[in-house]
Amino acid sequence: DAGVTQSPTHLIKTRGQHVTLRCSPISGHKSVSWYQQVLGQGPQFIFQYYEKEERGRGNFPDRFSARQFPNYSSELNVNALLLGDSALYLCASKLAGETAAYEQYFGPGTRLTVT
Amino acid sequence: GQSLEQPSEVTAVEGAIVQINCTYQTSGFYGLSWYQQHDGGAPTFLSYNALDGLEETGRFSSFLSRSDSYGYLLLQELQMKDSASYFCAVRDQGSNYQLIWGAGTKLIIKP
Image 1 (tube, one colour):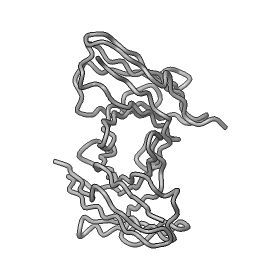
Image 2: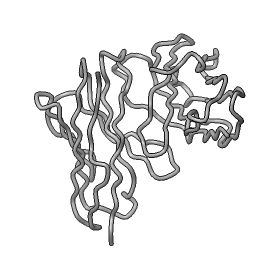
Image 3: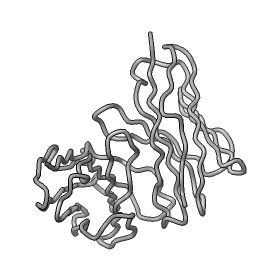
């Protein structure tokens, strides 16, 4: 079975531009979470979606938005990019949305560079 | 607020045992997880402790003391492939049960 997939793997954007990152969860997983990981730090939680509804939001500005589609894939959108948005963006899926489902499976990430 | 502290770097010898500590401060603790991440790779789940005590999975064990807000990951019979960053993460009720991550411990293994 395929794991979590993300696209693109690498992306270079200019300040002020917009970016869309995509994630496909493991088959059968209905929950998708997005994380931002700056070099040398742990992942920072951005969003969680379960059954197409937002279940959690981290401390990120409104420039960040996301959605989940009927097939449980997800998009993360970032508007008005800043240099500080340069990071590895990770998508993680798990079987369900409730707290008991603690084990997450991560995709390889999208490396975003903002110049 | 929520915070986790773990050493930034630990060095050990191949075949030895190493312990990576994690202390946390949360508004509503709900469980401690450990993840491994190789350079350029994605985090992979290692273990989860919701109750006090030791959980063993092969060469890796994880311990939790809720009264001390403390946990550790124990790696035995170290292999070169264990060279990676190790993150502790807590599921925090105050953050809507989302994972709050530590900054990670880089484990360097020498032959």
